[in-house]
Image (cartoon, rainbow over all chains, first blue to last red):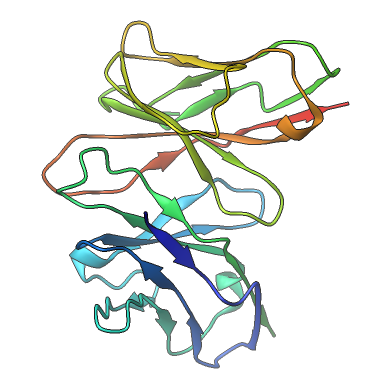
Length: 112
Length: 115
């Protein structure tokens, strides 16, 4: 069974400070990892995927298979980054359904 | 709006009543998912369809829950004899079956309150 752990329910930083949202996972195979974001009064939306190795809105995330982590990072936080962030895992290609398992989320607040 | 649509946005019902929610996915997406989210939790998988076939159901989905996607387009989720513990946000999402996993597109959800 797969599990996703986001150890911080709340994270508060000041504008311009670096931010790191932690995500650890448990899965025996080779998962695909995602970060989803939910801004206030908006729907849940995909932020980035580990397989694309992209940077979205200045955020990056690296899959560390040794530490089973997929932490989300941004060097300089902006007020508009304030949102709920969810880490999610999919079994990947060997998983036939791309079912996502989500963490409980981290609420990021960026203070002016 | 070409995104995933859910109806209604909010539903308040008395315990014991039946409720039905509707989801219209992105038209070219062949996979459709239902998730449930309660306060302080991430979304939890309930069930998913590939076209009209329901391929997996979570054990969270008791016998009181049923989902359909009759023509492989929109889907309905029905809860019979609602209980207070059913109060939650019900999320629908859709995706394409591709060799690469592009993730889901979510709807805005239906918030159910059972009183």
